[in-house]
Image (tube, rainbow, N blue to C red; front, side, top):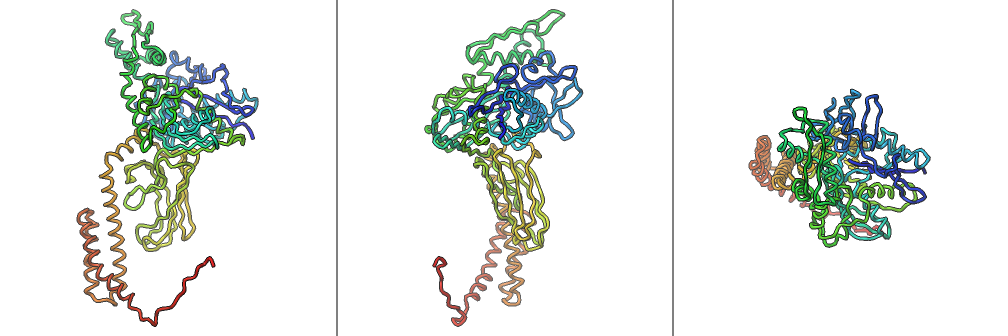
Length: 616
């Protein structure tokens, strides 16, 4: 089998790894570095630059130099319009986010830019290995949604890679750690990179190379870039106080400030203070003005205090129903975990010292390489990852019926049988959604398809089997089949939806805040459905029994049905509850009479039967 390369496609930096002679090996780029900046630039003559040479263009050619585009993957423009970058982000004809390249008079999608980085790493791997590479495993943040995962696979396809698996970054890091330590127990992976944050709880078993993901959460719009932006905002504010000059509209100055902010952040990981010195940042009255500021670690920590608070919520979600004392180690992954207060936060929350058992920059690619070894037939890793949100379909009344709950082990496939909601229904629309709210309208719609050709029948008679499947890459497929006719239809969720981290947070928060209201709304719909079914059944019974039973039994039921139907039209909760109670009371006498008649059988009509044990 040909080599399978493993790529950590990071927001700030990317890494490629391969198994050589059974040993995972980080492949250096053409400059000899193990990490490659996830940057792309275009020169006046149209030449494309990738990696470190592209990053060097950021000050002099900032409008045509692109980085951190991973944060744009799978998003519409409206979702990321507040993203602060040195280049221009706009909407294409579909409303999706694209970046503008003025020098070429052309727009690029985030997938295209990512494909340039992936293609560069692919070429580096081929040069190093001396053979053509076509298959790859690519890592993504655990909280990447359907669109972002599919966009990542598409980026691989654009550059000629067959992406065999999309694996979550924290899970990959745990594979690297488990291979190094050969230890057992609960491990919390704390992954804070340049643009995304994930936290994942896993159980490791070294004896059989089994890795079970127990829970995962995160924030796909939180990382070192946000730390840099806080420092940038502070620098601009302080410089304006001192000089009266606002640098926020000066593109060239902003890029120099961005570089200085990143440098200061890195220095403050090992020093208590950093001097930010940018000569000739601007000019006033034709006189050069220099920027010189001192930023203390304590001030930096106060600047990012709101970001630290955002880190806590995903950690708390993962720790829910978990005994923290059983967590053996905290595994740090991602360059931003070098920030001291970031490490202290998680250590204080768990009560365990953070481990430095893996290289924070290389662990994700190395772990993905361990999985690649297994896919190549040279390893024995057993990996069980989980879904980050629940998946379900819309049922009668707009209820979000969950088939695959949040944190379900993948791959998974769940199926249930449903029926029609009205008499004579010949087709059903299958509406797929993801989220934790009880009503579909409050969740994110992922896709819709129709199953037609259902034979006309009374409501509740047709049998429609719906199956939801989530593969190893976390991508969803839905199938529907009429069990009576065998007719079926299906859909693969392949980038038609755009679920942002804000939407995910909103779903979870609203699910908590409005739990009681949601419960009442769901119960109201169930009561309506039950009353509709009761009216339908009793109408049929009255029609069948009108010539067999006394009118004193039939008429009260028909009157109660009329009242119930009026209550359903008015859609009033109290009237529906009252009508349901009265209909049940009215129908009780008729039902009791029918039951008595079915029991009035003479002894001669009873057939003797013997129970037979089929096993004999």
